[in-house]
Image 1 (cartoon, rainbow, N blue to C red):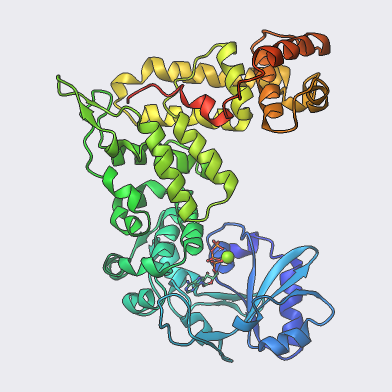
Image 2: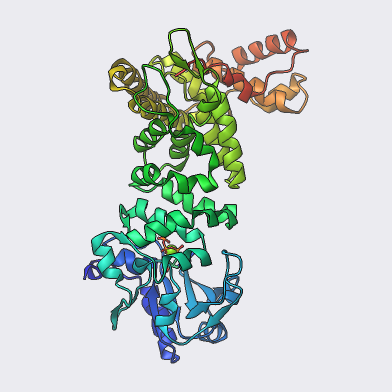
Length: 470
Ligand code: ATP
Ligand code: MG
């Protein structure tokens, strides 16, 4: 078995030994066993045991423990700074709400615990001496690339509808397909997803989107995703009637996702959502050509509402929406352009914006790729060269700072940041040297001439650059 090649952490051995020396059977279980068997290094190790929560507490006395999950049977043990979750064997009581069991019941047999788990590939246990325990054919399904529910798919999805999204998530991450009965139940029970909290949806959906095989799942299961992400639905079948495009809006969005780095969630979300506002902005000219004026701003608005509803973090939301809003900008491989946008966005976001544009272009009709892809590649090259040669100049590295502005009489507040930003842009564009005296002189002039005018918020300042209609 391939588990021999993967080092099982000493901590796992130590925890299993400690439980068993106290008379309680224990196993590694779930995702780590699945990963071990498929040759991936598990990112965490979950253990399960015949010990009840109280017995676990006694067993692990003296270790650093986190007890937050104890009511449901889970104790987190910190060993050398790493958390390990240890859960008492349990079965779930009735699910009245399709979300959580009304109560859990602790049991002494591992097979009962395995039977409450979602998919056969997740319902295996492993022990260093006793080997693999696989009562539901998880190893067979792992080899066959199949996601199959443990027990009746319909009942399992009725108990907890999040499993519907989890089935799709494991399919995208491993490139597996759904066993026909499981697939049918996914489609039949999809409405149950409405009962699931936004946080749980978000976690599974983000993992799904970052799966190496996300594209197949997005293509095949849009009606399922649209139950929780209804914003996506109008893209499907929306013809663009534009010579740049050989796909409908949804086909184009999915192709753009396919062309992005699966490890960059922000970029993947931006690719998925960059044209989500198009169906609201469609016009047809006298030649029958379709246009989508203003769609980048509309898409940004829809993307923001979607991400806020999922309670996505502020940073993820802000960065994704920024990329969507700016996605129509065509990179210009000139130092002036790159420096200006570097000042506005920073290197990570600018790199993503260029990547998004590349993905966007490659998802259009290949007849229009050539010169635009060249420009994009050159801009990316230029960005890395500038970063290599000059490092990144930031506001913190300017030869003047907020104190100087206060001394010049600018009141404390957002105007200070805005003025420093303007200076940074000028320095990056080569209009000013990053030296104290010339910078102070420029500032004095700015303050005198614009004393009465409030600077526009930076976000608004960048919006005007969206001008394309593709
Ligand atoms: P990952 O590699 O993403 O951590 P995982 O399989 O470990 O994948 P977790 O969400 O960490 O997924 O869950 C751990 C285990 O708990 C699963 O392998 C599965 O056995 C069980 N499990 C998790 N969520 C559910 C659920 N909603 N219904 C049934 N079993 C579940
Ligand atoms: Mg896990």
